[in-house]
Length: 254
Image (cartoon, rainbow, N blue to C red; front, side):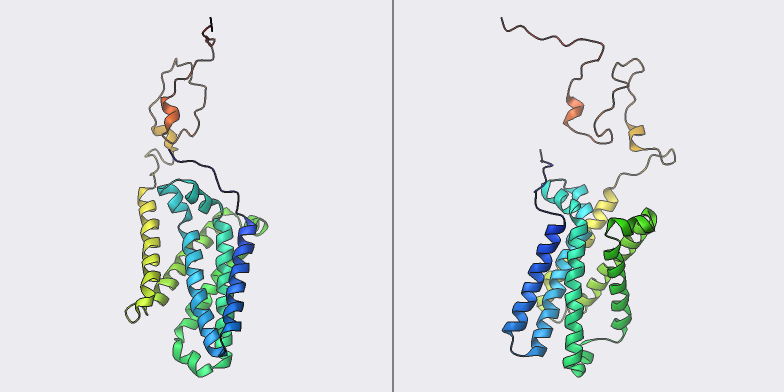
């Protein structure tokens, strides 16, 4: 049986440490690479991969918790917001590195990029900014749960498509992009499998899943006692419950 205990480390300190690690990595690359153009290109490549890892962790957190409930997956689910903010920080460094590369060597930057990427990439960054701002409770309360859900669902899938296209166009030319494409494909599989296995609603028009549970006898003394997690199966269904109307008999130690 798995445990639902969550590691103590998480929350905003986790985001702070991620941003510190990203900043340290960037500073090390800049200081250790003599050529400024090569340093900018290296930062672009590294942050593209750190952004992918952080995004995939946030993108698949709820699906992994549904498919494989355990301490690590529940920790991911509870810290999905902080991983998402860390992804935004990584992609901010990625954007700064791109701007630096464009300013240092405009010809190389134009040769490496597609003009259409300015529109698609700009839209991706707009969604990242909106998703990051609405990761805070006050901003999320302003837009409401429906708009929040729509924004984060559409934004997450658009960012996944952006990663798939950007890594996919280099997949056939360079084997170094194969691990990233495998991660992207696994993220899609996890999301689709979790959506396929998601319990469907009852045929009575939105009735909760508890309505499909076997009905208790009308005279059952436990009819008024709520079960823990009534919509799930677990070891508690095998436990023998004692009616409230009957006193508990304790055996004498003599």
